Length: 105
Image (cartoon, rainbow, N blue to C red; front, side, top):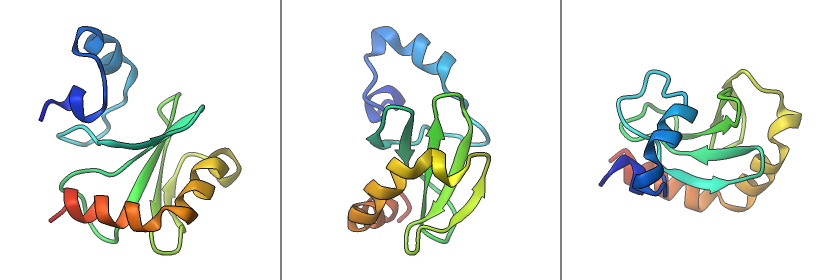
């Protein structure tokens, strides 16, 4: 699957997407699970344990959140800034676990 289809980006606008995303140390795109006004939730492919998701802010800062207890594993962002993502995650843990397992068999 194209990294742009996984991220739901129109291929004709791919250059804008690539320019706006900080890829960090990942070798593949992280599929977007949920978008919010100021951030997006991702689950990386071929990622490490414990099961977690990433919250990336529009400015490129990123937080890793443990799916089971929603503890923040590493961060450049305050908990207050990702409150919408955490509220959504409380009600969607099953989806997050399923996506982590799907992308990290």
